Image (cartoon, rainbow, N blue to C red; front, side, top):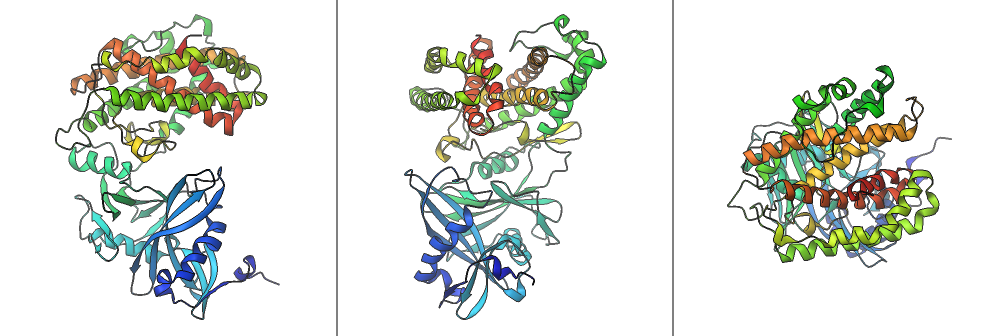
Length: 541
């Protein structure tokens, strides 16, 4: 006998309320928040509380949006955890009778005022996707619920809805592609503040005319007493050949293949000191023969685009959210408190996970524990009075996965900030070199991921591959820094001079590597060797 959709659920939830007034009905809201949502959201990829114990869910706000055929709700929920913190999420919800149902993404079976059907994620309804699109194009306002649909300057009011589809698999956000040239990103986890991705995207493209990030096209915000909650961001869809992480893995694989194909003697390759700048013309011919010229040309382009992004982010003197600022005591207290807390957390994590490590990873973990006082001292040695450069709004979570490859060029995207940080911390002005440090850590990861993922492919001892990888890394960093520093200074971006640049880079790379260590130890201990090796290299032990 065939299984009906109903059989996959328990008995339906029965309510007296009609769907058009459901969220004004106390009983519906109470059961929706507790019995229905608690079972539903813990299974979703975008739910960020899987490592914590859910205490209860509360519906904190909702708004209604109706087409000719259907009524939909945008629901803002607050998830409270037993560990004494909370998170906010956004859920667009639809009600569909069984004969109208055209999706398998169901929230729960319900009977509303005698009508049987299902609560579903409204993003899976084309009618809803069209309705949202048209609301943005017309810059609609929903004054009853303080919802603002904003049309960007570069989006024509004559733009017509043609088609919509999901972009890739669902991650922490859900993206919809419209007309094959626009993408609308719905933020599943939301904050009682404007989202940095919305803020920076709009600022870069509408105010600063920065061309190497997808153009801002529109947004959906809920107006609050003091701020806005960003629910969705619409941007142009940039034609691309994938992200720079994928590109770098392929490029580095080719470099390691050359070791054997060209009979390269690793010990004979000319060395380069870490952070020493080098122009492509000055790279030794042995290195060009081994790694090829194209990789270094691409790195130079990426450095230029990064510098241009930072010049734009620090180039406005009127908008106080983006005006460059100097270092001071308040920033230093914030920075040290944050890093020492994070460092202590990582120490506890590594001590609790030593049993999962072996070989080089275990050796480096013991070295990390032996050197913990030196590392902590390095974080505490941040002396703002010695720094002459400026802080600006930065990307905040800059790595190769946040860069799109467009032919020989790059587009920079996803300005939401570091996932572990609070929304307030993500908006703190920081050294632009923190983004550069994030990218360098991503270079390091690409090199080691290539070694780990192809261990039977290259006929060399792992330690020799590590040695070649560190050498390649130093040249990649040298080429990148040469271009980045030159372009930043040409654009009047105050990043300091050589000594200050070296100090900030070392400080930020160490911060990034310590941050990464927690993730690796908790999710894939074998890869903990990558941040541990990075920490050892920076600290020189």
